[in-house]
Amino acid sequence: MKSVTDAPAVKAPVLPDAQTVTDVKHWTDSLFSFKVSRPASLRFRSGEFVMIGLLGDNGKPLLRAYSIASPSWDEELEFYSIKVQNGPLTSKLQHIKPGDQIILRPKPVGTLVHDALLPGKRLWFFATGTGFAPFASLLREPQTYEDYDEVVITHTCREVAELEYGRQLIESIKQDEMLAELIGEGFADKIRYYPTTTREESPKMGRITDLLTDGTVFKDLGIDPINPETDRGMVCGSLAFNKDITEILEGFGLEEGANSDPKQFVVEKAFVG
Ligand code: A2P
Image 1 (spheres, rainbow, N blue to C red):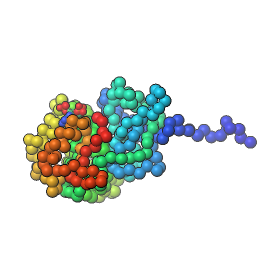
Image 2: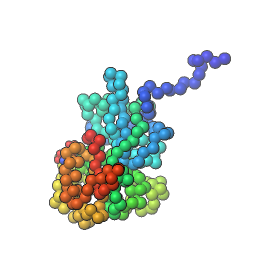
Image 3: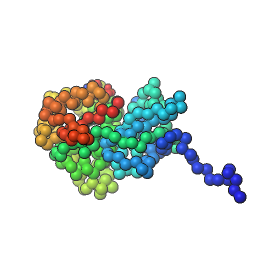
Image 4: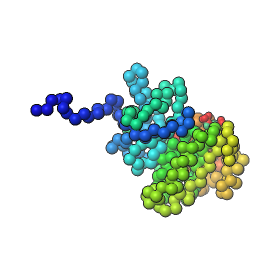
């Protein structure tokens, strides 16, 4: 007869809704990305977010909204995060290593989904900082290329190094044969990447809001200005950014939509950069 101690070691989840970290990559002193196992039951639409976190010092879950950066078809879940040295969650989360566990509440929600937009020809993704995350998901989502002729991704950061996660992701998408098979040969030609920096020298400097307002973006990309008939937008950045870009898109005649009321652009309000 086997005693209890002979039984094979089964690693019991130490956290409620625990998932296991499989990969961690540090991009700068203030940015990192990581992957975790995906609960078998979790279904989500590319662009949505979930609540993730760790147990706080008081033993209670400390959770924040994180956009899922991986596409809906992926086996793992990827996240892209800031590190705030005295931030309640990210001061701890930044130290996770493969094999560690985090809490992941399997209830995806969010407004940056294809269902919240009316059909169009050109889709704009407007991101600042870690607001790039939902677009890392949507850029790998077949529907993005089925629904649109062109996808413009703008990413504004203070410094060049902060663009690197997005730059490498787009580069890898363009070379990914599995994605080409899934989405269709030549899909990557639809991607127009427009990175800008505001506090460090780079080939394109300035806030995307200013570059839209003075028409520089359209000139640089060789396209017509944003038009409510053809152009659709998704926005993810700081509160101030979301507000400013909303005004600009409304100025071009676009209206803000929601899951229940699809229109010409959507803004992720849960995101906290
Ligand atoms: P800036 O350097 O001019 O503030 P943050 O790290 O503060 O969230 O900013 C990330 C990037 O977003 C920075 O390049 C910043 O530019 C830019 N940004 C911040 N607020 C706005 C805004 N209201 N409109 C456009 N860009 C913004």
